Image (cartoon, rainbow over all chains, first blue to last red; front, side, top):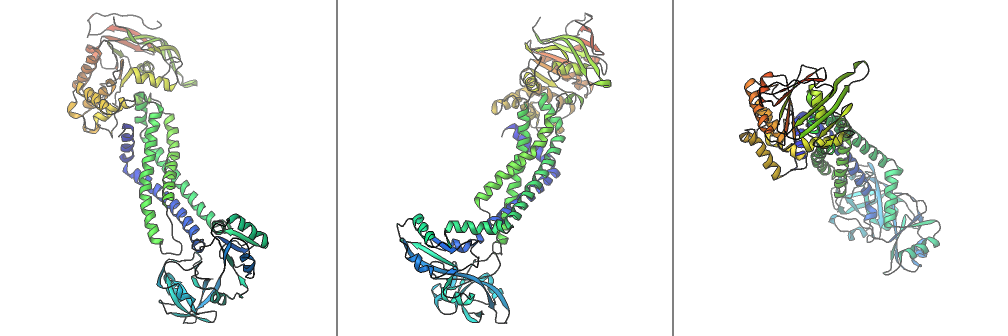
Length: 375
Length: 244
């Protein structure tokens, strides 16, 4: 190990109380930023979860639709016009909307109904029952995490939506809504009755292309023939939904603000402790300077100290971050920590700690080697 | 006579400014030659440490020039002065200035590390230097585990490990008892036996003059007297050095 790294390590651990204080600062800061960013990613993924599980090439929607949950409707008659365009293999109407789920106790709880052909968009992670069973009248799929809220216990449980009797025919695991309103999956026609949408209307038209068809060409033609509608790819619709929920509502800005606050707190704490540590070791830095060491050598000791702080603090913070992931895994808004986020956090922590070292470096810049004779 | 290692010409040093200004060195002329122990003596505040700092390229003179191994320090910036120190000078301080978190051998190695020498060779050289000062058995001891005399010996090993041309020692025995002081001076005198190396010792302690080849007296920033030390001959040579 290089001697300047050994010196940095020993200086770091020499004052254990200060080291602990530094670690608390870094860990607090990194965990705060990591959780905020994890929430951002988790939220970003949750708001597009249905889009992600829909196997379609293009989405036709009413012009100005902001997100998947947007209640705007378009005429289902357009299905015929869409189907007539060259390259289109299939057009499937999709309906979505809020409705009231009446528990056996008579209590009403809001639900978000999703209805389609049960092929293009079908509930995923089915743990009990089958998707095919949803085509039966009154059959719905619910997520296990909402059993208590919906007053059901599994397959065969009965309830009522807007006066229509329903029965749980499939149970999913992990399909949670970020709005905390449970998703209810059913077939198209029944979904319309649960939401109260006439059979002439749909929320979206899902367009599947023929093999070999050019997506851009089909999209262009669709757009031309449906001037009051928008035609988006899944990626575009996903991005639009994500941007709306994250930035249109201010949720993303709040998460980012929290993350920036964490960075500032961390930088200040690390900067302060590193500065006081450097001040305590000024004699040593002056001795190094008297021995003829270059400024770069002295900076390397301080930078090593900063990076050691970063790596140790980051390691501890990541462990806490994973604990938070586990704790929120089944919650309404899970924290999502991806490998990219971990790498980004490591780089960010290192940058934060090195920036924090600047104050200490400026202090060392003023070290006069002559001071070794006076102390 | 051996070649001069450090030559100081017409050195003046003014410290502070305004009412607090002090003319710390006045027209100092001095050469430190290889193979010599030069002792610099004088009362407190006479300018000993300031002269040591100027000769050691830690402090730039207000006027005059210092040459170290033929390289003039005039006009050099802080980094260039550091390079001169790194290449030619070793320091020994009164309070040792060892790194408390590093072992004896690591303290010595550090002097090589700042010079870009590391690894096994550096460790072997540090080992040798500690052996020269009689501390081969304390390689892994930390400063707090060593006596004052031992700590100063580590500091000397650190000063000589890079084989500098000049060793400048500021009151190296000031914090030691008489016996340890004599031992330290003995080591420094041995180091100066090498004709390519000069040793300058700043001290108050007249008992140490037996180790000196030359004794230079400084008062009020001027070199006022020079004597041939007991290490060489008992004859006294007095000269008015100031203003040369």
